[in-house]
Image (tube, rainbow over all chains, first blue to last red; front, top):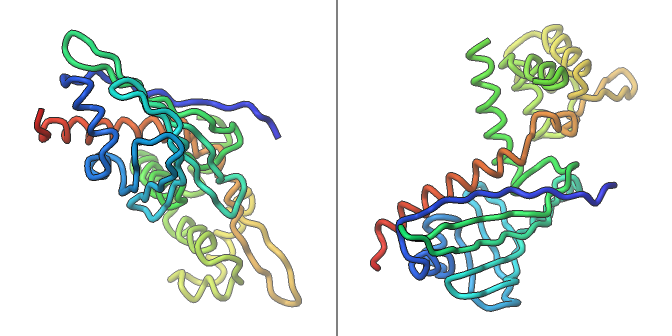
Length: 139
Length: 107
């Protein structure tokens, strides 16, 4: 078993002030609109769950709350098959720019032997079969 | 695409074979007879598909008396599940939704 981990980074500049992005990242009813159903609270140590449309549930704990600057929480998924277990940390960093805010999301902690990315085998399956269908159609 | 991925894609590109594999993934270990009952093709055809799946490492067989039980080997799919790019796609889609939300929100 290796302890090497990987991370995923997605960055985008958005034409809105950091304060507004912060609200979208930290108010439960807004989080639900772009991410998942949740019982989030912007308090370090707060434990909450993110519930995906596919039925998967992510166990999370708030790690960093720096209003308008940085938000981090754990993003864990427990599965019967250890290879599907996911223990990761999601960090959002907000940087003001001339046109608005650059939002950076880094999710780190995947193991190279991990088979599933974000919990819930169904999501992976759907994507995989969609991919297969394309390959089959072009074959 | 690596040779392992190529083999997996070719093996699962056949809809009947894919349906058999999916059924094993969802329903657990089953006999050829049980699989045939729901496959819509003959037992020899099901056996042939199982043989191809087995060669690709996607199923394992276990003999018990006169029956052969087949089970899915989901771990064989690992080369197909490039989760780093899956996850990147997931967040890009979430960022799209976030931008839509920001447009609707008050300042």
